[in-house]
Amino acid sequence: MSAGVSPVGPGPLVILKFGSSVLRGVEGFRGAAREVASEVAAGRQVIAVVSAAPGVTDALLRTLQALDASALAHDVARVLATAEATSVALLDVALKVEGVAATGVDLPVRWLTTSGPPLDAAPLEADRVWLRSALDRSGVLVLPGFVGCEADGRPTVLGRGGSDLSAIFLAWALDASECRLVKDVDGVYSADPNGPGVAPFPYRFASWDRVLEVARVLVQPKAVCFARDRGLRFRVAGLGGLGTWVGTHDEVPV
Image (tube, rainbow, N blue to C red; front, side, top):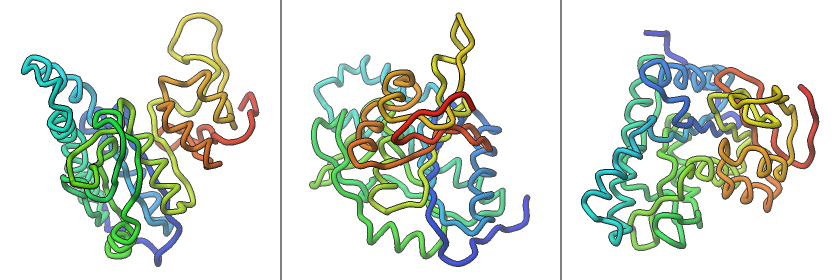
């Protein structure tokens, strides 16, 4: 177990989103915990937004399909949310082992109110008072991405890849100093770095529109559009990497 890591004062707020591709098994959760610990050691407050572990959401969807539950949208959302809840609990444990005191937020998720279709909802309002109060108490929050609820408390989800939108919305709502989407590649490339053909080049900076053009699989388009419409910069990076800043213009190669 590592020595305890404590934030220095309230500090700036960093939103770290850990995607499914990162949270692969024990080492994935350990790596995410170390990433959070490094930010805390630098005196920053952290909200860690987590996706489901790989394959978990797909397995739940197969079971729901077998149950013929397609007409029960809010119930489907409630079941799917359990995948992110498991990731919250696992990262909370990994952080404790790393010596980081954190608050893992259990379901139901009341901090994010949504509107629109229950299985492809849009974030509407964050409970800023509750979030800030919880951060002031512990310095680190672990939140389930992808999920929210309607004003009456019924569960919703933000569409596939919705944890990206959860993180970007939180960064906007809380005026965070940085929002970093942590992926299994260190940034945005001109093409799929694992695909065939000419080797792609990485961007140091990429416009929102460029990301929509070349990285729609890497970053949820809804999240990119939300950031673009509000002029919000964010970063796409691997664990411990520099990655790509996404904003108003392109600059290549790194």
